[in-house]
Length: 368
Length: 242
Image (cartoon, rainbow over all chains, first blue to last red; front, top):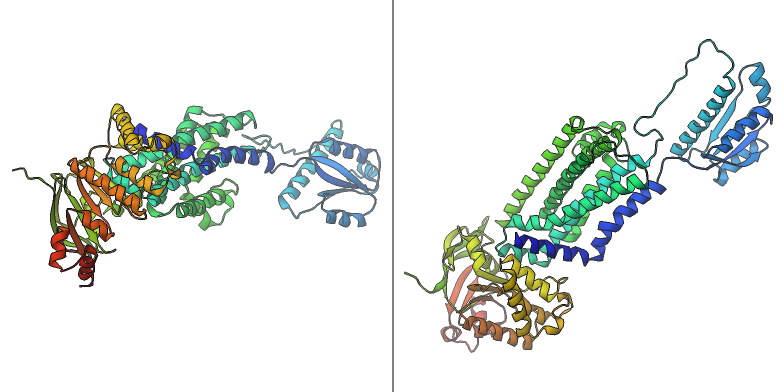
């Protein structure tokens, strides 16, 4: 045990004396979570729009006021004719133009129908889509408000409710993803680098010649990173609760246990990488290309798995991060207990065992 | 019957597939002896040494290190030997004191022992001024001397030195050999590989490996007589060229 503590102390010296690993360990998680939380978002805020109001009556004015009053849009320009629309889009600032037809109010009261044309700049399809949805819903609200007193015989009003994330905050989607990436990065990449470093420097040989058993060496190298990864997980959860007001609906204990499980999965991957890679550089490349990219692209973090082509969906099954994201989304947003995520948990456990057995095998071959 | 051979090797062989890296070598090393293990690069020195220090399993043959068998008692062997190689100096990002504490620790020394041994090491090598400096900032010669002392912290019966003086200046090499002599006088057996032939002259006995086999084994003096050579370099060249 005393040997073990000595080993871990030495490992912490390595970590704390290397500015690069310190940055990856502590700078990166905070930077990423803030970046994803504040800067990278699917929501729209204060989008510049222009308005072409051909009728200029009380109703159009009211609708324009409503739109301008919402926090989503700011009316930048009022234009007078259709020919101006094109040039306005080309300047790039304005993302949408609303066109009210002639005699809007009159048509609405006489013919019971009037048209608003929403023209959006679809060079960014996501934003265009969101703008048109938001605008329509503002107009619809207005319509319902003026129709309140009139009884219409039959009317179907779809009432949508977005459960688990009613405000559709994108940070709710990013937090589980970022947490997954960080834990993976700290656990898999940092351990594989730190083990291959000993190989590169030749100190691994010295450690193997010492009375320490190979598995003691590996555990000694890995334990500090478990500790650091747990701290990172705590920091991320605290940031998301206090800065982004993201609720943790489920049990914090379960969240902690599942996170530790995933940390161990990643560590076993890191150990596996270190048995394959001979140099720190290779270890880093394998970790980045082999782990980070799939986590970002195929885990369902950003792109929904259900809409991927079938072969990619199959591949996504073997990515541990996919299962962990399902688990933490379940716990944090839906508040589910182990009864709903035991399958995913079991898959992670199985993967961990598989990676460990494989690394032990590889390690033995190397020693022969 | 207890003999004073601390290393006993008989027909030790290591094969990698069809390639025989070490071909049935046999030799003994006595307690307190300085045994030079010579050979050109690729002759099988390192492979042989790896089997002796218990990190590589022999294909066949037998070997006892400090009375422990290399097949069954590698853990006991590891406790009783020290090891230092040219490639490894120490952890560059740890101080002299931290390195000493760490290696003392993994060999199971008590806290008090570690403290005492570290003090002793610092005094003997006159390192008071740099004891708390990172090893990375010290010159190579110093590092090698510190590494040697660290490898001796747990009082091993045998110390294996794998080209310990590679890349070190002549003066430091002299000082290094003085340390080796002193250690051998205290009863520790020295097993050293080198490719400096002048260093081979310092050894009590020398073995020369060629293509996985030990082609010559005797004191430097007798080897020179046998091969009618003026120095070990000539002996080595005559052997290696066949």
